[in-house]
Length: 139
Image (tube, rainbow, N blue to C red; front, side, top):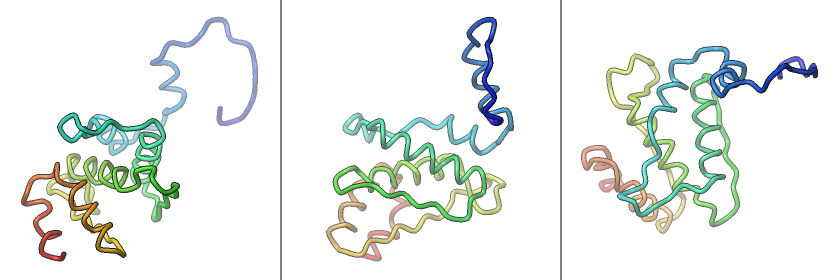
């Protein structure tokens, strides 16, 4: 895949072999992020396929220490839900800038309109109260 060279193979590789060829470089944070399941908010929300792709790509960029990430999606595609899933995985994995995993991260979610802030406040309700208490004070 990296060289683009094509050729014949004797048999189809197993899933583990394919995984090893795709992700041959080990990344501790990528593995931690992948172990955390998507939050379904008590069974009321199901992740759409493109949301899962967006979250996985963002988490992969974070694991690879990319300094900036930009997600661009159309209106109504669930950008707030995607942001929630990213925050959920960061929070549950105890990812922080020191990368030591000793404390929960601080995540700042900004919205330019009150209606969007209210939407985010409701979307992030799966977090424990002490995690989002600051959001309610800022409102």
